Image 1 (cartoon, chains in turn blue, purple):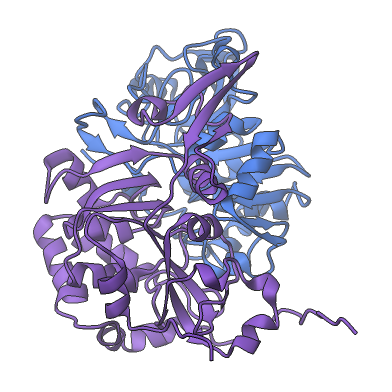
Image 2 (tube, rainbow over the protein chains, first blue to last red):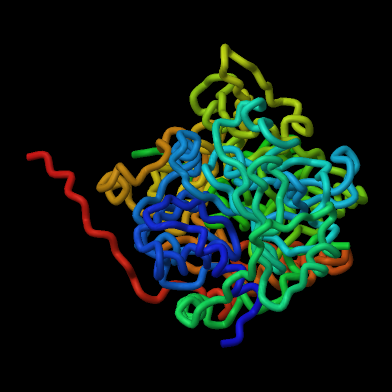
Length: 262
Length: 304
C-alpha cells in the first residue's frame, strides 16, 4: 500500500505510545498519532491537550486545532491549562510530543529565535507549551522535517531542553526527569546514545539512504550498531489514519507551512 | 433592580481600555478569542497596548500589524493551523510598523503569572523552564536554589483589563462558560477590569440555576457586551465552529505588508461595527453555526 512520508511519521509516533499511558498531545501530526494509537495498540491511553482538555476517546472529527469544539464534546475533563500543567509537574505525563524549527545533537529544540534573540534574523512563534513538556514529561518525542539547517550541532536558543550539553546536564540544571527519547523525521528515527546522549540514527525510513541522512544533518551523525529500516505503516494503521484524516489535511500536503522561512 | 453593566462594544472599548493598558485577550488559547474587540481596538486606534495571552492565534498578529501593540507577554504568537505570523516577524525583524517588545513565556509560566496575580502573591515557583533560554530572554524570571531544590520563580501579572468571551451572561456579568478553560479563570481573577463579550444575554435566574458553571463572580465584571459572533473566526462551543479557511486566507494574504493592509482594510477598517462584520461574512458565518444540539444532562441542586 502506498503512503506519504507524513503518514509514516504519524504511524511511527503512534507506535511510541504504550497502552494506558498519559500522553501530552501536541499540535499537527501528534493529534493524529494519539488517535491512531488509541484505536490500535493503546486503547487505554489518555490524551492531555494543553488548552485544558483530557480525552479517553478520540474526537469524532478531524481537528485543525486542539480547541476545536469537536475536541470538547465527549471529553472526560474540561479544565484549565494550569491544572494539566500541575499534573505534569508532579510527573504524571508519560510521553509528550512537540515540533520545532531547529534541534541540536543533544535534542535541544528551538522554536523562538533564529540568530541572536536581541536582534533575531527570524522570529519564530515561541514555546507555547513545548518548554513545559520538554522540562516536565517523562519521555519527550520531537517530530520535525530532516534538513541540514534544522538539525544543527548546537541551537543558539534553547526553548525546550533535551539533554543540554550532555550526560548529567538535566540533573545539574534541576530538571526533575525526562529527556528526549526520539526524534522522528521524514528520513528516519533518531534516539539518544545511552552514554553520550547525542542523537544517533536508530531506524532509516524505507527508500532513504544513509548518505541522505548524513547530507541533511548538521553534525557528524552516527548510526546505531543495530540500525535497521523503519517498519512501513501496516494496512491497518493506514486505514485507521485515513479514517481520521480522510482528506489528508495533515498527512499529504506539503509541510512547507511548518518550515522555517528562508 | 440590579444595575446593568450592558453596553455597546464601542463604548466598552472606548471607556475601559486606555492607551498604554495591559490587556489579556485570548485566554482560552484557540477557542473563544475575542476578535470583535480586537477589531474595535483597531478602529478606535488604541495604542501602546501590552497584550497578554498564552496563545491567541492570529489576534496578536493583527494588532501588531495594525500598530496597536507596544509589547506582548505571551507563550506563542502565530497562526495555529497555518504557520507563522507575518506581522509578528515584520515587527521584530524589520521594525514594521514598529518593533514591539516581547516578554517570553511558556503556557505554564504565563498560567502561573496570572495565577499569582489572582492569588495576590508576587511570585509562584515552578520546576518548568529550568535550562531554557527563556530565563535569559525574559530576565523577569528568577532562579533560586533552596537546599537541593532549584526552582524558577515566575513574577505575577495583574493586567489592567481582561477581555473574555462567554456563552451567556446576565446584565450584571454573572456568566456561564463551558468548554476548555485555558487561562480564562486566572485572567478574569487577576485583572483589574473585566469586559465580557456574550453570545446571549439571559435572565439572572438562568445563571443562578447552575452556579458551578460561573467561572468568575459577576462583581468582578466591569462591562457586559451582547456580541453574538464575537469569536469569529475562532469557535464558541455550542454556537459555531472554527472558520479554518479564514486562518488559511489570512496566512496567504498577509505574507506581504501590502497584502496585510488590504486584509485589514477589508475586514476591519472599512467596517463600522461588529454587525457590519457579520453582514460581510453573510452565509459564511451561517454555515459555521452548529446545527445539532448536544445537551448535557441537567444537574440537580435540590435542597428540600
